[in-house]
View 1 (cartoon, rainbow over the protein chains, first blue to last red):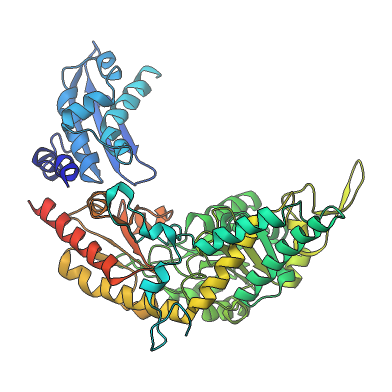
View 2: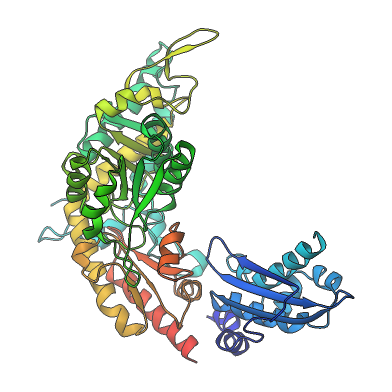
Length: 128
Length: 418
């Protein structure tokens, strides 16, 4: 049962119960809905960027499993102050480190939902 | 009563388990409590043996070749079709063997729909349909400029509001498409009532039988259906395989949507005449070994007795419905509370523990359940759920499996209540 205790550590459960950066921004630079089509996890992520391409604010709302919501909560804490190119360079090891646990293949999409949605939102900005 | 039953004639799931080798394996080092048979049933040893025997003793391309072995291959395939037809109480000449129930429902929509739907015609489905009995109708109504209308569900329980049927029939639908047993709600549709209402306005009834055929007695002629689709792997057959029963006169008029070898009478360079009957819809080399597997699965399910399977599964579901609210007080049970209105499954959600987390924690107890939208996203939207957890039972489900389920649920509650 050790694996379960790892996955549902108090830190993850705490982020799931009381996610950081909940809500919405008044004038976001970009909003994007992220979904796990197989599971139904969904988040609405909003980013505020300055002219230098630095994230100045972030907010999200969503529903889904503890891993998806805690993963998004943890990643949103990390986004503020980072440049878009820094965010685009982040990958799953970074999220695993934040979660403090190696998430298996059945849940990896839940864990990465926040980061991947942020990256897609940023990509959609640069393609405009 | 044979090898599978108790002295009182009821099904003994412990005896039944012996027929399914996978149930004594220990994936991840834990005994397996498989409660996901609605997604796919486990395979009996006898089904695999039947396939092995067919491929090792009768393998040749069916419907072709003049040699003895080819005739044996054809006999095996057509014998399997006849066995499956008997299982559903329909003539073999009306049973089209296909790759899946999805293929069967697409065939109805794309062949019958294309020939019969006109601009403004109405197709009526429920809001609870599996995507396989929804998207083909979305596609064909869009293509034909027809309208798709819905039998609604209760926003809280998800139960399909069949009492709306009469007023919806004023829309004069051309076809009504419903699941025999909902793969999320577990509820059994009142097919004869739906058929009567549909037929009274000249509509046909198309039934997705995937969740019914393995869990309860199904005699297609008594349902009133005009089309009936089913899937092999939910019955213990192989992944590939499914079928469509269609009323003979409808089948005779339907055009094939797949063309090629084995479905023709004569072919010239610029055109072709198609074969009569079911063969017209079975282009290419058929999945004969899949059909043989399904026939063997039908034999076994009939040995268990489908009324006895249904009775056993009802007992299992009754226990789930009774104990779930005690173990997980905030559980929101979808579908009817009464086990007698169900077949095979119970789905629920909990605000405390999301379905994925539940499935993850249950997995640590060796319990396999389904978490997600179960290919019924619109229903979950309607219920304002992102996912639900589904427990499904089979002839081999025991009280030990349910003990493990509830132990896992208690554990999940403890983790999330902190």
